[in-house]
Image (cartoon, rainbow, N blue to C red; front, side, top):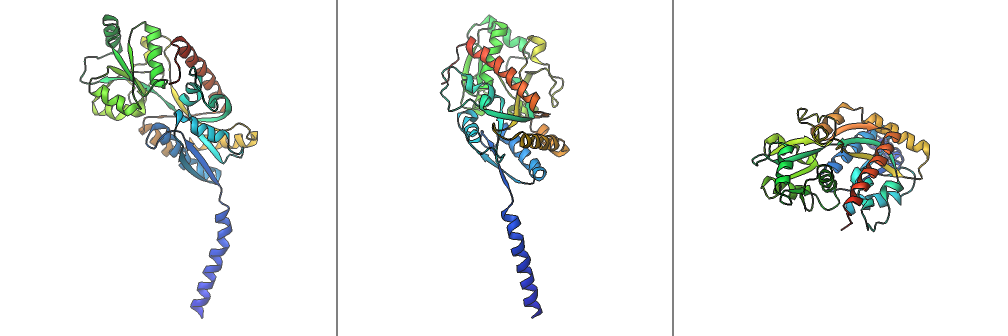
Length: 319
């Protein structure tokens, strides 16, 4: 009888806990990139840190397609209750929707609400370590000596890598040829194999190869030193006005109540104060950087103006 009474008590306690479990709130945090990339990496780290802060189960969902526009559209169409959020990258918000002839269901940069920035993503100017180039000046000298023969790789037409190559051409007058690939990985393979000359790409994509000595890092595209390679110069030192940095921000449905947006911004701020999250982001090639809503909104506006100028100058159309 005592044993039966004990089991009955356990059942009562278990049943009493069910409503609390059923009421646990779930927040979907969308990533527009496939698993393993820098965007997905930032998404998963933030989800892990934010869950306990907002008292919800934060579930990462990969919604790939159209350089993040599929995930952006799903976020824009969601209820304005904060249950669906999106880690929005610089390219999705400021490049893709501005390509000439882009036939997109929405403009993410105009129709989503940036809540807070999570990380910056430096770009590195890389060449094969066993190749002939030992400086950016070497690459530019070769391009001027052999017009139309020096090549730069990218992750595809209209990608951040592509537009940085076009920006470099504009600022230096060098005649170089763009070679698009389907993603950064195959582009890097051809850099390593000597089939293309250089690439300006996300540091998270090439940190390991640089550390292992397979790639040579010649410069960083933004003006701040990159923590893992502080001795590498910024491109702006060689090419005045060249200052490009990627970013990953938390975005949501534009009609969310201001009080809810404030709570989410505060949650990101708190999450970014976690030393473990900061350490893991940095080791993965990102620069942890909380920026409030006003700051990331200004950054977005500046980037849209920069890239629209490049897009119009080269008449770059959506493929």
